[in-house]
Length: 132
Image (cartoon, rainbow, N blue to C red; front, side, top):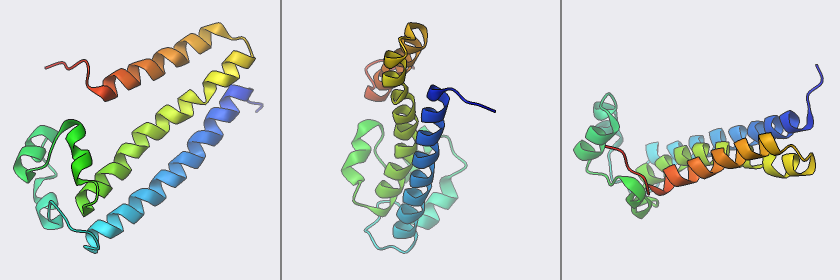
């Protein structure tokens, strides 16, 4: 099967970033599990709470929500969380890599869709629009 340029760029970028992400997640978890970094939430406590929804989990574990998680990035739990967050960012990077492809191909419909996806992702990540 012959893939178009955009499909090849997206697939190769996503493959590389997915492998990179899994390596980072594994390393971050090892740092957490081996207690090589100070931890804000004990590993045993996480396993007691992981069946909870995210808001209840954060409340019970005493961790920050929103962008304030960055304050704990140098803890075992924080670096594990940051590695997971990178997976979402990697998806955005893979989509964003399509912008120059569609500009070069003068494919304005797909370019519009990709730019809209990037904008929606970035607005959601900033927390500007909060729905309760």
